[in-house]
Image (cartoon, rainbow over all chains, first blue to last red; front, side):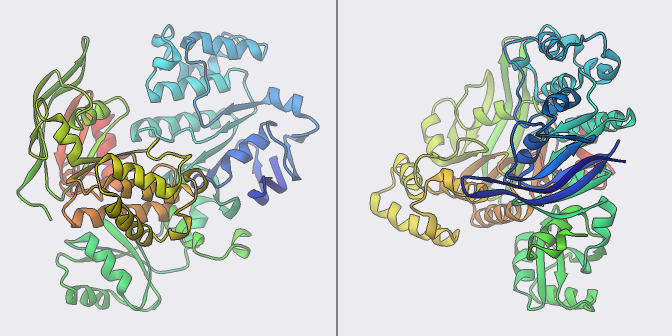
Length: 310
Length: 242
């Protein structure tokens, strides 16, 4: 069942295009990811969803309600965790939660079951000021506050930015639990590896959607044969692969370099010999499956238009 | 790539804030031209250690030598020998690109003539000549980051400290940024970098991982991956820091 419906949304700020003809739907109970770098338009979209900003044109409905006409009703039904930490730093953990509960005419007790798995992790610090919490704890408090009125939809704008890998993993586990409880979740992230944790994702760049599908479908549609290559000198390896006449794309990925060649029939020994001639040692070459980041970079290099309509 | 010269030596470094031990007997050395990844969870004590090594914070005890200078007695010489780039506030948004370069060059005592020459070369190299007279606030984040890095090494320091330098940019720009880092390292500049991207940790020659104020692992990415029987650094980090 369609829960969020976005149709032909355009938004400009003083002549700069922030969103260009955005269309997508999110089903009830889905965990949907908006994946892309800063300046892509993710935050603008969230502000449209949460009735904080008006689009130039287009329509958005949440659970059948229009974000412009029915904004009062929508505000009661959505939870929003903005990208910037926006709790009251000089209030304690408990006071912040109390504050948000009161605004929504509810109490901590009434919806405690929903927030318990998250809030219980920081409850022993409930007398501490929010400004004195660590990054991971702030994030848990912000999520608790966004949930305290039992929203039907949760909007999370880059909840894991600047957070270490351990806290990121814990956060995604919390989201999976909330999804189990039937809450529809829209989450944005610049970390491409988090895409695989979503049911479906939209890859977004410079106000346009590059692709919308399940993470598996996006990676399976990578159009080239992808090689992972390493040698004893990565910096020289990148340069030599870029100099290769039939080279198409060269991107470092951890200890390997991901490489595509214009010649789809090139084989391992041809690449091996080329690098050996350039003086590389300890060469390792293998064919691999593309990940979301490979796909994102491939789509970035394509002209916009048809690609967005998968 | 790694040479014998040690440009950072840290021995039994301790930093306490009241009863809280932020750095608990840190011991490590960084070689000239090395890309050294300094990792840890939020709150593990990375920023404290980095501030100490840059000469911005006095340690409680321990020996620290940076670029051949002693931390306690030669702090000012250390500051002249290093560059620093943080994720935020690296450049002045209400100054132009050229003005920012001139400001940083001037602070480090580079002559006007030399600044003009190097500015031109720098803008050419980064392929951003057309925005030289634009305000920082008007240029894309990716350009800002490349410029901030270039400004941090404008006075040719032996060591540059990068505190989460690549946040928020697209994956291609992030890689172009690392290309600048590789290039600087290949010319002998030592890179000391913190990041939350574990694939970037694998670009480093060696990495240390801090947990609760202590360094619990220090080796090449490959050796750590083997030691912890992990498939990548992300898994190593989760095994160590969780």
